[in-house]
Length: 127
Image 1 (cartoon, rainbow, N blue to C red):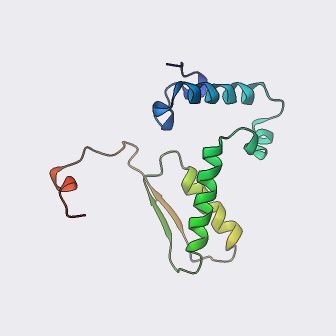
Image 2: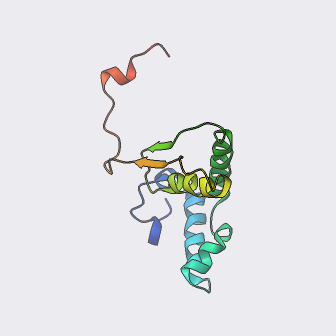
């Protein structure tokens, strides 16, 4: 299996289930990030150079979901924020698409311990 380098090493997120070719591609992107000229802020402004198609797809899907709830009153609550990508996407979309909606709150909760194991009650149901 391809070795996880740098930022990927110790990553407990999606990279643990990646194929060798995906890990190699992620390692190449990391090397590209490190060798690119400019500050981290400059690189973040050009984030589409560095993120995968899958990451852009997730961002666009979140955007579509957020648009569907624009006419719904209330707050957006995310349970289990992990590294905060979705949570901050909701906050950014709210600021862009409804800049004067001072009543909508974007709220995130996380245990920072992950999910406990399933109990018998979690696995028995009719659905």
